[in-house]
Image 1 (cartoon, rainbow, N blue to C red):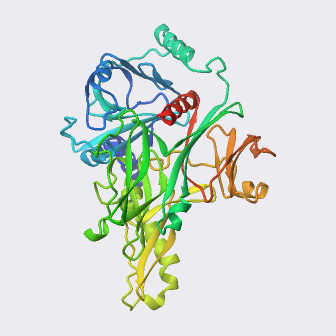
Image 2: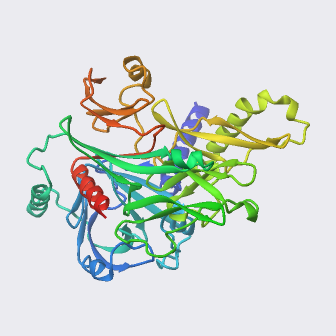
Image 3: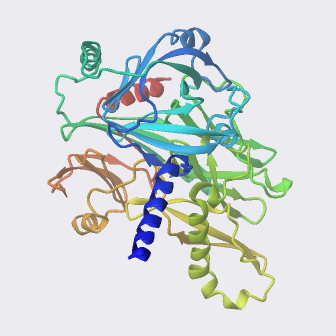
Length: 502
């Protein structure tokens, strides 16, 4: 009995120690805060200061107008001025301060006056739509980036009466001002689709070149309201909309592409931090005369194929943060997927490449994988990671791709789900090459050889006939698919029409 009693006391003591220390555990992974319990940011806050930088998309006067704007953080409603988010979910991560600020915002901790080596980042999303990302400088100060401007908010009250008259009046006002707010139950869906097509004239001249365009489709209650398009890529980001294009320079018979990305509200007149040539970390004589092929572009990241046509025609895969294209080396697989990604990368090489090339083990041909050599491709209606082995055999350049069995995180591909399984889509539309379904589960976008077909989704199935179609250019492919729901489709459409007219 004494032994049993001692054992029980030991177990209770161990649980007590664990309970006492649970608050000290470091949160390094993404965590979603439960409703009503310890929100990472709560209460009433006010914008007290701001900092402009080179990529800010608003001027001093506009930034100054934000001073005094209040923000409310409640588990059912988040507001910043007139902008709001209902039914919010919170995601928390602890990051290295300078690494995060440099990669995501192109600034340093000194610029933002942050002394801590590690900071907490709180991302807020509502109804599958990203709202804002906040930097917790301290318990009483948070920083948010709006259109490239860093706004400092200080806490002024811990309590927010969500059911109070002030909050009710606020929600009534913003709903009244929102387009189509009279029908609160309406399914409002939009999608920005980035497309690339091979320029056939350039191919005939011996140099590959791709043309890019953006299509926006808006639907209300499963009916297509409008379809509009513009040249190049209109990219929705946390800091506002950006334009992305590939500019080609031809000089002395040489060709060099550069990827240009900049906020739409800050036109690019001269080469600056936002107009950056993608450069690989190979020999200096290979950094020029390269052709750029965008494979995927999302909120924060871009996947490209870098083609060195004047050397041996090498085709390298590279992966960059949008904010730092060419300013740093391409990301390696662990930067994006951690050690699990590295294991999946090595497994793909061993299973798909090395097992069939036993004869090369003792040869001079180098089949060692480069951890920078990976990218995003479409397969069976989803974005998937693939790696690439580049090698030279008998003076002839070759490459082989292999699968990386790892799911792209939300930081890379925010929404990438099929509400209808790919095999069911293929059984109904055998010629389907790719498919996208909306977060509202109201419409499906299906690609075949020459067209995009838009179907409604009824009871979890694709409708028998498409409700609209869009003609594709020869060999045109999707490189971006960003969904908007609720009040956002109308706002996105207005921005695309504005940029299409510029």
